[in-house]
Length: 140
Image 1 (cartoon, rainbow, N blue to C red):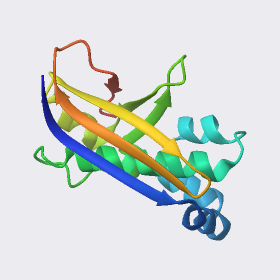
Image 2 (image 1 turned 60 degrees about the vertical axis):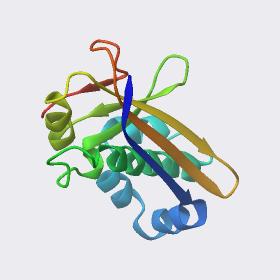
Image 3 (image 1 turned 60 degrees about the horizontal axis):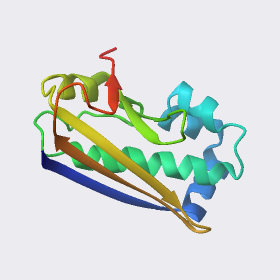
Image 4 (image 1 turned 90 degrees about the vertical axis):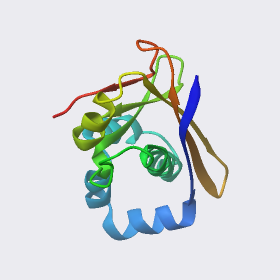
């Protein structure tokens, strides 16, 4: 197995909170998928969960930058999911899904964290065994 890309991102919670205060549900609709919005809507504090997803999306985007044709990836092309154990994973849509479909042996691994002031994420893009990838995608 070889690492193809690594992405990391940190989000200051006060900036994420300002964005939510200014743009509210408009920001949530623009930046998160419907599934992500449902996933975090009742979680408190909302800003930590919102910021974690933004950091994860940025980290995944950065990890994918070593592949061709990734510049058109949008916020909702990368979706953060929680498995039954709470472990985060990634579902790709649109441009991101089309890019990854060309590389069936790639996996994306994702780790999220937050403190009282910051949310962060690390994404690792790895060449591995097909079928063992913790991502799913749709090209819709």
